[in-house]
Length: 104
Image 1 (tube, rainbow, N blue to C red):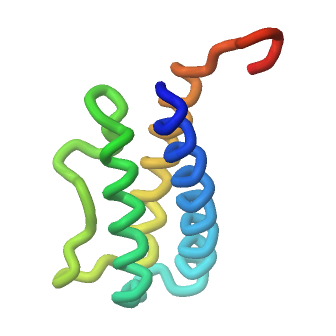
Image 2 (image 1 turned 180 degrees about the horizontal axis):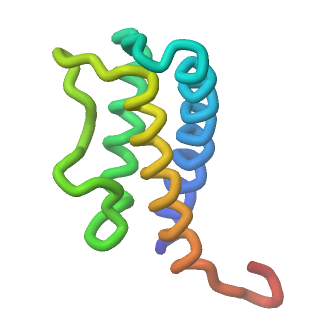
């Protein structure tokens, strides 16, 4: 990975973890409630960035790129998808870790 890709990865990873935590909390209280359109737009933008990084063997979910804005997903739907993306991001990170001058 190039420096720009690493920076994009790090930013997106932190944002995705934060969204996963927040939506996960909502999912525990009300798993079948729909995500509001503002949050859905944020989630889809983040998924788009994730799709640019997670290609080929790293693609999180075959046949899925983002949520439909007409058929609004539930809190639990979003939590499941974000968890899959986070796992694939971790695989990408693990496969690209290298050591330079005694530091990772």
